[in-house]
Length: 151
Image (cartoon, rainbow, N blue to C red; front, side):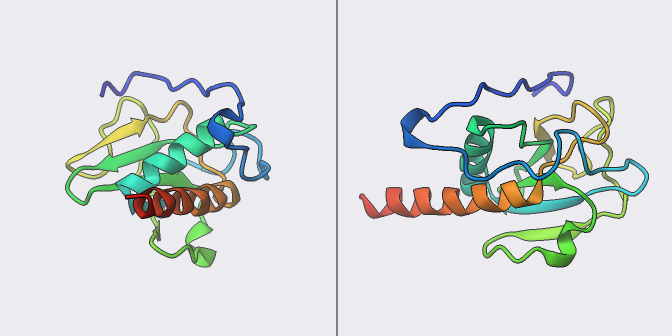
């Protein structure tokens, strides 16, 4: 994927019976200082892709940059610094970056070798709201469990 693409959020909808999972607690673009860095929530790719879809259907611009790591088969959601201290969502991890190797500059390669931007950064301070991400990951896990049990 070209890193110069900008992702345009979809208009809110309740298609396929999905309603927005949570209200935005921060305005879009809040949360990351390029010098302080951001934290990264990593989840299995399948759950992460479901969560991205849920977030993009929501009532606000709730999804920031997302990395796809082919080697680990994970997605990494960029979240505001300090999120890792209170992150407790089963099946995911939140890592503090303290600015080490994480740049939200479109002209810089993704910070992890073998990864690429699924949703590239559009602005240096954009991050996914952790409360909204938590709700989307929970909904994604329920959708995956329901789909797996239908087989």
